[in-house]
Image (cartoon, rainbow, N blue to C red; front, side, top):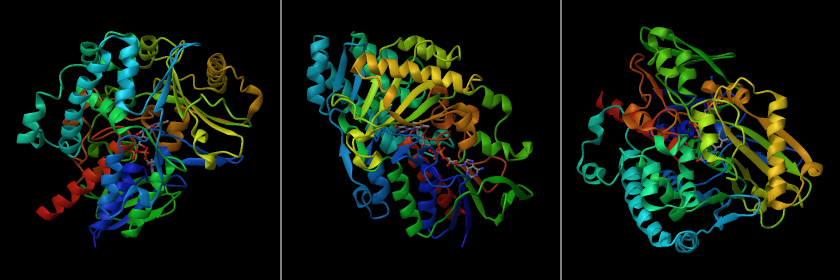
Length: 492
Ligand SMILES: Cc1cc2nc3c(=O)[nH]c(=O)nc-3n(C[C@H](O)[C@H](O)[C@H](O)COP(=O)(O)OP(=O)(O)OC[C@H]3O[C@@H](n4cnc5c(N)ncnc54)[C@H](O)[C@@H]3O)c2cc1C
């Protein structure tokens, strides 16, 4: 039996483990932290359960496809609820839009803001649907090793509709004039970690995911997905070992012979690393690294975040929904302060998640579980307690201005997490939260490769390689690398 070591237990690693174990490989997952999930860990404190990373469950079809390949369905593991409204966008102290879960209702809302926008939304989404189909069925499953992967009839048929070479910003502007509508439709690309004018319009497929496929929530929280995937991997024979940080390798010429942690050594035939790509490269001698330091320094990273996990001993008003985007600030300026002139934002946009609005299990009775997120530039040096607290107070004030409640007196739990925690907790390159930005020059074959060019038996998976950041792409990344390894072995 082939011995496979998988580094890390994020979604990509667990998916790779499941597929390789299903193919009867001897799979061991080594995770530095104490639980599965990677950036989707949880922590429990004072009666609350906090999801530490992802909170939006988009593209339910991708999760279902994963479980189906093991003769399961997502519902065998967790209960999914579709949110309605999908989310709220706060534009100012006095204006917010609750985004309805049906396309027709959203079209009606947009029509009230701009004459003709309702019909245009349907046209915009019809085109986004084609991109989603080609993207999900054709593009995301490619290992991104060579351009020839894309020479096929289906892809050629779709290429003209994919808008690879125009920007998301121009694409949205072709349909809509109203600034708020444009911001609403540009918002999903924030998940891809780049500005709308730097993101290929191909990614309007994310609008299809947002509006047509909907925003869902797995009861118990996002970590339930990682738990479910781990069960699938274990049922197929994979082993998980926690609190095992990989610190290096022993080589036999250009082949890894042993994977080393602080307390053990593991003989191995193949290694798959789902830890941050840059970090894994730094565990290798320079001659075995795929990319130079200059290469990495020239990559455009998706943002980091300033996060707050907050427990309140009272309920927020009913009008507060599960997901709220506070877009009551200058979008362009904040974007510039993330990507062009990296600094803490002058006046941040931020995101508030309140899962206890629909899930009693994540907070004590009559309490509220809050997750607050400000996207910020990676590697900022002024990540200190005073700066974090200053931004916490900004968010508290804006919540008060919009919803008329001062939460200060009701905080019974509070913890922050930012750049230096991303580095220490996940070995994250520059403290990134979501990997590499999905710009045109960092898409598909232009992403860091899943196969080492210099170490015969080393592969990479995760959000810094194909297809990119986000839970569904990370999960797909694990499948892609596992199937690539299996195919290579069949050809030997
Ligand atoms: C705050 C936040 C919010 C997000 N929101 C969303 C969202 O709402 N929806 C969405 O779809 N996506 C979201 N994302 C993105 C999504 O969570 C990630 O893209 C995805 O989880 C990445 O998975 P991964 O497998 O690539 O890596 P990771 O989850 O980073 O897993 C890598 C693992 O490797 C481990 N590791 C590192 N070094 C070592 C070592 N030396 N030895 C052993 N183990 C090691 C780490 O501890 C970690 O467990 C969010 C991310 C963050 C941070």
